[in-house]
Amino acid sequence: MTSVAQWVEGARPRTLPNAIAPVLAGWGAAAAPRTSNWGASDWARALLALVVALALVIGVNYANDYSDGIRGTDAVRLGPMRLVGSGAAAPAAVRTAALISFAVAGTAGLTLIALAGRWWLLALGAACIAGAWCYTGGRRPYGYAGFGELAVFVFFGLVAVLGTQYVVGGRITVIGCLAAVAVGAMSAAVLVANNLRDIPSDGVAAKRTLAVRLGEHRTRMLYTALVAVPFAVTLGLATTRWATLAGLLALVFAVPALRRVGGEARGPELIPVLRDTALALLVWASATAVALALVRG
Image (cartoon, rainbow, N blue to C red; front, side):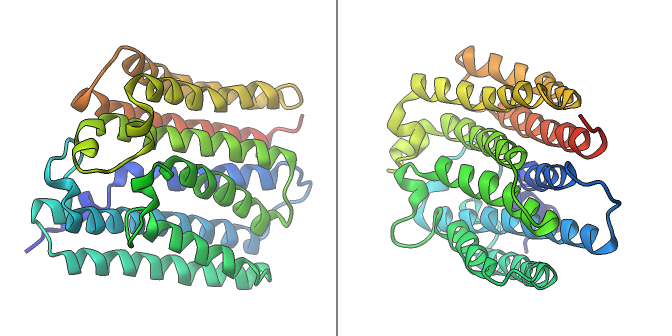
């Protein structure tokens, strides 16, 4: 019988910053132009957006576990334990866990759409769930064709940040777009680091991730470029909102990660890079959101 601890590990809690950060950034962007206090409905929308993001990330983690497991991709794995690949849980149980997570995301999303009164967002929500499943599931998973990083940039950057700003604040602004690009780039960097670590095993398993296609050297260059994006955005925002320089606090975690990647770390040596990149993302989004929401000009 699969233990609770194994189910929790299978949900990969270390990836949750990728869910929390875009909602924080979207909330900060929505709060930035406000002159009045938020009401209960505003906070309810922000909280529901967070529930949607968390449930989607947990769902995609279980879905990846299931799909990679039944394909045999996880036969040789350097990262966290996989439930199906390790034999700790039956594939059907892991698939059910993924579907339950998507159902939670869908229910929270429907409630959020009803509160916002923007029913066209149903199509966007359906696309998010389909994108989460098809990353490694289905006949032609796009994660196996090198499009995973692009999907992360779109769904965890553009969609999540701007979607949160829109349902909470009622509009999309330049600040929101900049925050979306920053969060999307750093979220994609987390996946780049993951796939850099797995180049040897993914190549054997015919998983043609972007890292496998680019090769090790160019993947390291891509990681560095993506991590630099949020800090470039910070400098741009600071020209009109000096308080957003607080986003530079994320360098505490980004610099060690960059040193490892630039220092030719491989295999298990790259595991701390995933942690530090996710923490840098969370710190950047938190600091920037608070600066946007609380400090004017």
